Image (cartoon, rainbow, N blue to C red; front, side, top):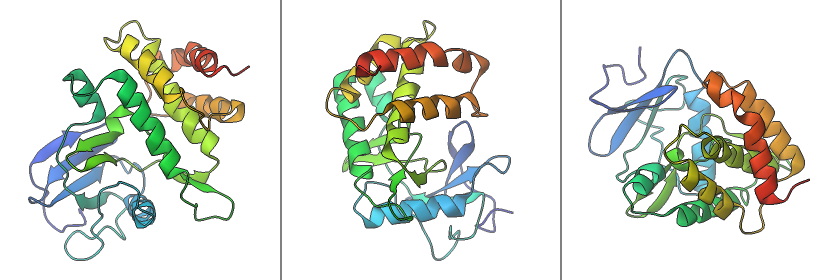
Length: 231
């Protein structure tokens, strides 16, 4: 049974691992499919980074649908605005600006101490579909993969995700993705050889990846290394 104790409302969004339902004007229910992830742990990470001023949706921890104990259901603030990808397709943001915003969000996040000594909070899936451009600024969603660790891995995953799109000739936004990648890496970043190599390994075993996406990992890594001037 869902954490709300009742059937969710209208379906308003779906991703690779979860569906989002309308609860009311202020809250939505994000429900994991097939026991994917741990919603309670995800909510705890969101509360942690929000307490440090990071732009994430509020999580409801008390009252109907409270998200402290459910492994499948996360009740969070309902936000308005397109994803960064939707805004780009609509012409509301260009590729250079998108890459700059992503880089800023990564740097902001990595200024937050992790919950283990000597670590930082990592999102590990920060890309244009996981950033909502609200009237109050960008908000980062989908924290199911978050963990504490070294920022180099987070930079590695964000860059290789963009690069997989950039090297896919079947993608209509391949060229813009290449421009986003260049913008993301235009300023000093936290990308490291070790982080990029680990990111490729993680992507290769990600169960949500298609066979084609896995096939493109090698050339995607090469593109990131050439843009970042990594040996």
